[in-house]
Image (cartoon, rainbow, N blue to C red; front, side, top):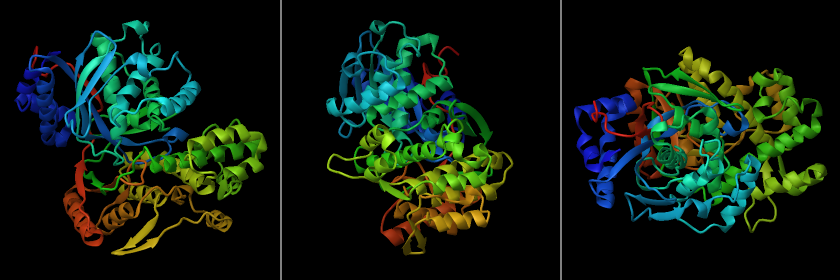
Length: 538
């Protein structure tokens, strides 16, 4: 660790530039100001002589494999040059005292490990139940600060797996946070913040010994974030932790596997922010949880209707042709699912599964709702198709098949689409999920990956961005992240990217009367603990 003033003196030097190029590649020039903002605020808060280390935790963009990491499907993320930065001053007690550079928007928070952690170490299933109950009872804290609590609770619950033998020896921190990831925009700002806090705590408690973050540790990170109320997988956490400069990751699950694939030099990705926001604390969270509930109900139905496949169908990905090995069986599985059903109807259909259904119902019901209807067939259809798309995406990327990459992205977005835009005219979109549609796809031998499914987490504004991008010469375009607002990603030839971005922005303003922001994404390095400026000791 070195003094805040030494960090400030490092910024902008030749050593800084060399270091930044190794982390951010072509995007290094835009990274100076966020560090300067963080360190100036830290100097004001802790003093220029305070000894600190830094943590950086980037956002991510998943090129293929949306909504399926928690179902076992492959994801293909990159880390982006927009990130969470933390300046950390270790403490000798169990207190965590956290501040944000933008104090008017993000109030400070102070707490102890013992105040927010479970009474004993819990299994994953027990952690699931405890975090649901705890979310109803815990004190209200600022939205950003709950991710620090989540990190601390994760450290306590999995302290043995993380190599901490005695909870009494756990040390807290003082921290200042700053970030330039657009919040609630589908770029994993929440997971980046959670990981930044967790890496900071791990470094405070391990120091020079340095815990090696492995895929199994990344899976713990995924479970840990359930503390805040969401129920995602570990795909975002793997992307943020293990991303490499200039590479696309291929991440598999159950067990987690990681491969790095080259990102084509001649292509680039535009990240286009619609300005819409999905607030995960309210209605949007219920909508996300209902999609996950539809997946889980689909699996319950298959276990009842196809007991002979019970050993084979462990996860939704196992219903995709690349795992099942028989497309005709995929159609049988989909036909066995109701297009829509309430939980009352599901209990009549599967009375022996009542307890499981009640547990699932609790995850996606608001307090004033008596009945919830799920779109089961369309959601599972999307999940199967997306798993199939993701199984062939890596090969297309490695072989430089840009046309196929674009088509995979476009079909994936159609699974989330809610509208179609023809210039300024908008029309509703609904992927057909009736029996006759299943029969037609099967009879015409349409590959499963070309069947979009019906997940429906896009918005008209994001559909507009996607359709305008494709008309403007993009190779592919799709929703980024969980959806219901946020960003779209656009794949384009590098020499055409600026022009396409400007065309989309002008059309968006003309048709919707709204401004949008965008930037070119370069695959950068994953999360880091930075103990000292690169010139110290050199």
